Image (tube, rainbow, N blue to C red; front, side, top):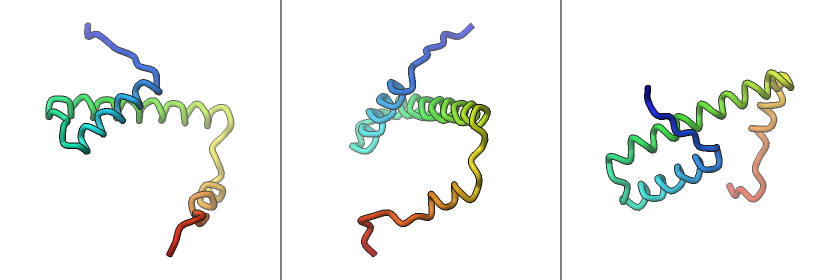
Length: 79
């Protein structure tokens, strides 16, 4: 059976941030790219579970409320 290493979400985010900084700087070894993708997938999966649990507890948000929130103009954005 394979070894599982569970990281809390904050540590997972920190590790992703560090790897992305290395990637941006051109210093991320190709072998570490696979680890970055796995961590990002783990984060996505955990957030999806948290969303599901929130919907289960509080109900899904109304589509209109979600659309209104995303369509509001951001302050300080110059056009």
